[in-house]
Length: 443
Image (cartoon, rainbow, N blue to C red; front, side, top):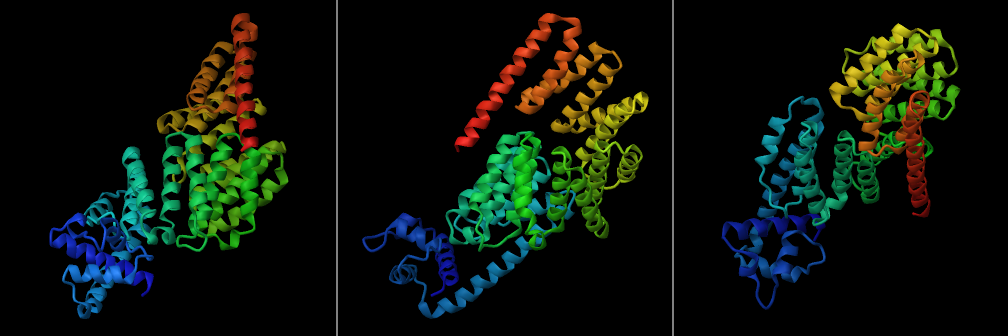
């Protein structure tokens, strides 16, 4: 008997038992234990056929009616599978997921049902989209728990999918270390022979993003480079374009400017066909950053203006903060002071409104740079302190160090005691970074 048929027989037995009002303990006797009945209902394949037949007889389910019952069960499961497929594929198209959640809640599946984990996963994704983080985390944790209790869970890669979403929940709450841990758990759980093959590449993309946000640039670049040879296999195209953005941006940050330009241009060629406005925006901004590093000012400014033409399209909102900040830094280098202040203040305003911490930190740093270069050390200190408070609260060590150095430059002219305090804090942060690096090397 196939594994699928065993699972379906188990579901028939569970439904019949429930309809008759029996508990597992009510059916248990010297021939079959409660644990074995539970295994039968969950479709565990190593349960002997004799035990299954004994349980069928005990419930009064005649063997000659089993084929008909199996066909009914298969039809129900096929209909349910299609509904869940529709919900999963359409979730991103719905601005409001209330109708999808209502449909999912109406299914009322038992934990032993083969698709129960999938339902919890989809609920978690809907809650994530609605930014209901606690509900999302509970739903996704249920999905992980149930996926481990049923043979279908391993094949479906629901466990890995749930870890992916848990990582995103943490990321959107600015918990980058937690996001990275969930993502690594997802990669460990991923089954290469299972369904949802795209999850693996989504996890790798997310891992590179989280490493980059944590300042671990070389590790992030290594993840992207290791994934690069498989670009032709990766679906959906949004993940492919994210990898183009990541590799181009990391190439800029690690000094590979010509490589960044070529990768960004290749990415733009792909993004234009599908009108991927978010990726078009990001790639133009990254291209502008590469040309800034090469001091090709007019081309860099043109790139940013191309990006900003898309600001009213559906783009990643943090990208707008980042683009204004980068453009402001270019104006600072050119001593175009008023233009610099105008765009950097836009970056700060958007960052505060959206609470995108890493980008808001960069915007505050840039505003501090503007004031410091203009001789306004006290105003610079205020901006740098805002950036430091955010970096400290979110344990962004590499950012703490950068900001403290800038604060020290300001305090050196004003207050020796504050200057010395900044220098001590720089030492403490460096010590923490070294300890974390030593820990990672010893893993």
